[in-house]
Length: 123
Image (cartoon, rainbow, N blue to C red):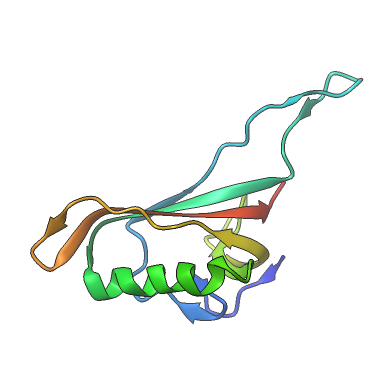
């Protein structure tokens, strides 16, 4: 993990044209306890971004990110740093893009867009 250069949501150094309305780190599922009773969690997590309303051209950008990287594997995602005191963006390497989900079409827009990025190593 290294500090991002864009200071914004980005994939492989390209800013996402419309920043998400909101985003959140996924909760890690508890998988058990070690021999000393300490909780064990998965090594990786996910980040979910949501947009209430997005133009079809803005949606095409994130869908193109997914399509162009779904075969090759991983990307560098600039996201807010997990657990930081400031709203600082960091470049997480080796992340995986999921297919974006959309709600209904509204005029020339799509609603309720959700996009997950996984395989992010955070504490």
